Image 1 (cartoon, helix red, strand yellow):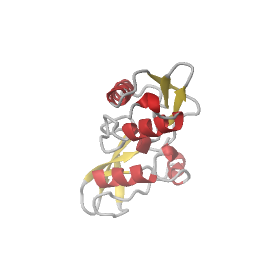
Image 2: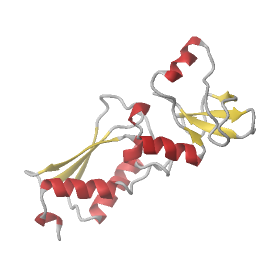
Image 3: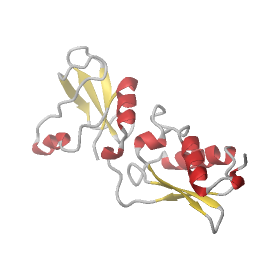
Length: 171
């Protein structure tokens, strides 16, 4: 079966399966779909082109160029000759777009997933975030640094098991 012999819906489904192999270069346990930056996949009949719409986690995210290259490569290796990757900035990405599977993958990788949409706003009032340690499950944690291995993470330490861990910040 070639891509030219299947319907647009089947092409899109095939593309989504191929995109399941494209991971975030900074957090390689997350796919672009897990991360929620994959916004849409469309087949443009008039142009015989597959369009993939992505939204960066923040406008200056340095990983977006690598992600675009990896998206193109996965789709072209899968038989799509013409691929357009479109980046949209609005609506702005939010950690609410992380999939439940992605949140669990973060935890298993040793990164505390972002708090639910309303739970993290206590920091605006000067109150510390209450996070669960991804290593031992304790909520007896403290922030060490506002920024960690990437700008979208903060560094925390568990006061029970004494292990440091990254926290994927809400935005």
